Image (cartoon, rainbow, N blue to C red; front, side, top):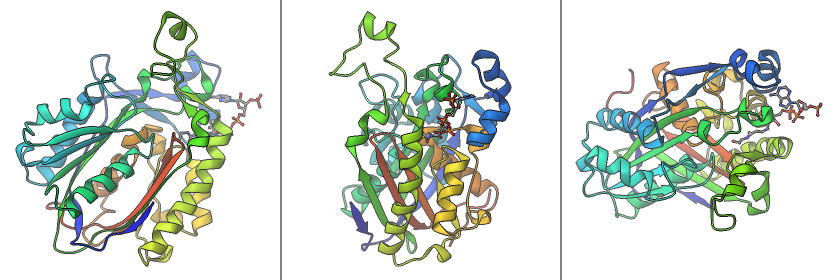
Length: 339
Ligand code: UT7
């Protein structure tokens, strides 16, 4: 799916994020599984990640991120029409984490649902939020990307447990005077379903003592295939959305790719022809936070003064599905873009 945003401009007017306090270092992981700080840093660029406290579920990570985004947009929860939470680690299979969050925020007149598109979830959810506003169905949309991957990672599997971390990021979308989203490009290739998945807990393999004993409620990943997929789609999706938006990579001020692996990011940046000064990277401190990765990166980019009114941003996500998604946005409409 590819689309150009031709109606009234819609932008991100509020931004917030939250990460749990607990830092898990590579050296600590090396005490649990046969790995090393050197291997993890060389192969992934990750130095440490955050881990949710036992009592923290995905909605608990989402609440402070969402509150910060609402405060940034100078809005209350009651003024939100739609809450979308992109996640693969909902508090529970149902009801949605979005409904739980909306209640916590006092978003009484909001519709609320979760969106599952793996690590691409945030970009998919942005597209939905944009669409609801462009169609006149909603005036203010809260989009959250939040995941607690630490709960579904097999801590005895060194090929996956070193990669992931927990976190949440949130944005408010509203109509603005100028700037905002220019185009979206999204895709899915279900033929890759088994490359990155959780085998049990759904209608195909319901939870049972056997599925638990067989470790089928953990993330399973074919790392090499996902790596190849990621390096391919990060550049192809970015090129497609740039072309649709009438921009070139030379126009982009800030490239925010999904933070899965530094090598994947560097490969994509090289293929796209964008130098590292214009690429945002924080995978070293958080690992792969799935749906939270892009909004967390946007949050930190702004804290570092790299995201201001007028900044042209390219973001691309990719992940389970297999899915991918990109958007180009002129950052605009934020009420306080320099804190
Ligand atoms: O949002 C999307 C989510 N996923 C991704 O983006 C992941 C994409 N894939 C990757 O990032 C990489 O494939 C990995 C980081 C997962 C693996 O890196 P790699 O360079 O592709 O390593 P590999 O899978 O080819 O494994 C090389 C070796 C293997 O040993 P042998 O078979 O050569 O003896 C692995 O067993 O490294 C071994 N290995 C490890 N060694 C130390 C795998 N994980 C570890 C580890 N520590 N944590």
